[in-house]
Length: 492
Image 1 (cartoon, rainbow, N blue to C red):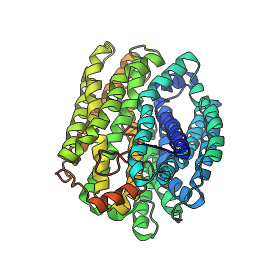
Image 2: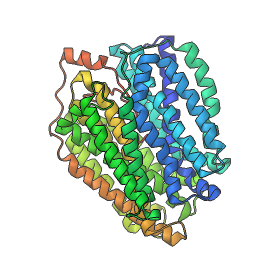
Image 3: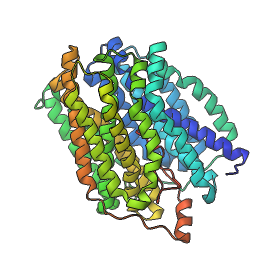
Image 4: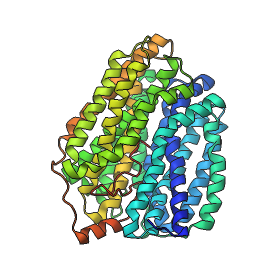
């Protein structure tokens, strides 16, 4: 593909910005044990170091795309990068868990401004016949975050200190922002009204439900705090759905959920990323707490899972046109459930790492099959003109799934074990990973609801429309997919 100098700058700067954002959702995993020791964190507080980022990222992602369309994508990208770097400094300077959690939430808000406008800038810069190739390169660069997150986090924590996983963002942003301002042209989209009430209601819903799950074991499941949190979350969710059905500018178009493929595909995405985030949260800690590996050693030992995911996803995406989404989703989630269940059954203080390699590989192959197929099912269920909104919905739902995937198994962990000893940690870990296996198997059952059959190849006119459709909120286009595929094919 022949690119102009301007197009090369856009591809390089948007890819590096997205790489940094996606890397930060995983780089923390191998630092959790160090944070727990340094700041005397409970399992609930460790959850919030992950979920504060994920929740704010999820609920503000669609708003970030709308702000870029209205105020200018280059401007919002630069502002989001600056906000992300300031929040990163706040994380590094955190003297307590409360400070760290608040700074992680601010990081998520900055990330929500960066990722969707980076994708929109890329789509606006390349002509339809160039776009799929450009977005494929973007996906390859950002996909490195899956492999690099645990490795980079482990190396930094072991070689320096956990604070440096956040300090590293500062020089990167210091280089990126001036280049964004001088090398990229401003780009605007159709001005959209921000759904402020929708953002507020979905935030209340997510925070209430996650708060109840995280605090349940410590405060008691029938305590006023926990029951109140669940009630607030349920009321927020009900209000959000009612408002989205009434407003003319919804954050998430509820009419799409009348499609069985769209609803099932999003439910699968929710459960799929719930299990993946659960694994990312617990596996690195098990390798350090029980098997006494250092942070870098833990990151390296996760490679059979993360490398498999990175290598197999592009191959699996090509099979959607041959077999359709349902077989890949069901088989992939079954494999992931088997891998999680296998580790849950053999987990004990005497477990040696070689016994974990086979289930890691099975899980990696399974999730690699399911991710592109789930998003394909969601995007194929809507008209091509609505692909951007559908992609944004899927990415929001999957981020929320990641938050719940940490909260639910962690509640099981706290009930069955704890940090008191290697034995109690192993007991809690086995129960938590078994819960993740159950969530994965539930996703496989829901996957059966997705209509069967391979996608129909688009005609020339439709294909032209498809290539010209902008991707939003993290969606991108794969040359081998019938519809735009996930921007990274990863868990970020």
